[in-house]
Amino acid sequence: MEKELVEYIVKSLVDKPEEVQVEVVEGDQTTALELHVGEGDIGKVIGKQGRIAKAIRTILSASVAKDGKRTTLEILD
Amino acid sequence: MINEFEGKTEQEAVAKAVAELNMDESCFDVEVLDEGHSGLFFKKPVRIKVTVKEETSEEKSAFQQAFEEELSQFNDTPEEDENPNVDPEVVDKISNFTKEMISLMGYEADIMTDSIKGTKLTLSIQSESDSILIGRKGKNLDALQVIANAYANQLDSDCKVILDSENYRIRHEKQIVRMAYRTAQQVKKTGRSQLLEPMNPYERRLVHTALNDVTGIETKSEGEGLFKQVRVLSSRKHH
Image 1 (tube, rainbow over the protein chains, first blue to last red):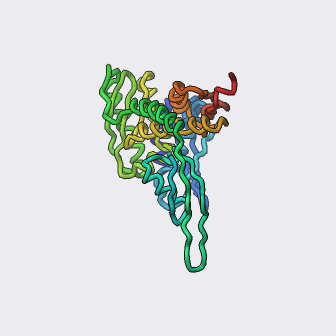
Image 2 (spheres, one colour; image 1 turned 45 degrees about the vertical axis):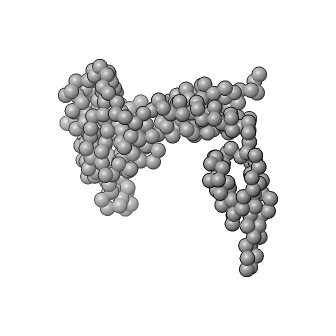
Image 3 (cartoon, rainbow over the protein chains, first blue to last red; image 1 turned 90 degrees about the vertical axis):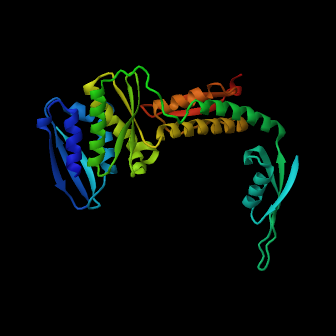
């Protein structure tokens, strides 16, 4: 669910949606989402002073947690 | 004007005074005459003496007037479109994008177009989960708005999106103006400056403009970055 949400938002913001990859890393208490984007798109996902990244994380934290786990987002380059 | 009131507790006595005099608590001075005793078998009531402050009640009404004038700028009636300058197709796309985003978050919502003023598009989120979509201090609504704007900018670089739900934006603006006036009143009374909590540029502007007309009060922003704090200070000190 959260994976689809992040994918949907990120794909709508970048120039190369086909290169967006989200990997799910399950932990005990948290689920980590690792985000890869195409070259030159990372700035679009992070935004000025991290505004976009921060907003995506806020939206993640507000979304319905199915199994009560928190979801974190890591943006990798 | 001096009145005496009784109650089981000081608060109760004050509440009685407020009801009887039909005035706000800040309009009068409260002096406790008898603190009352809670003995084992009986309770002696608390007695208070209430002195209405004549001159400050006048000052307050001037305050109240300025305050109400300021508030009347924000009306709750739906706004009319003014020279809409956003492609209807773009409006649809942004609206659908917002709806899809919320649905992937696990909530159901309808998105209505509130108004289009030039390139400023206001969308309203209607959902049973509106309180969580707004979030504490509008945190979630602001986050959704940031993303909606990033998306909109790709379609039309001039387009600005404002997301609202249950008239939260107007309610919030009123609340800020109200808080600004309350703080100004306290600062005037005590002469001590007060620092407000961190606010974004838009919210700070509301405070500055609201208190601009209030005599004897100055406002200044302090701090770095997007979220600065406004200090409300008495300007009498400097003269």
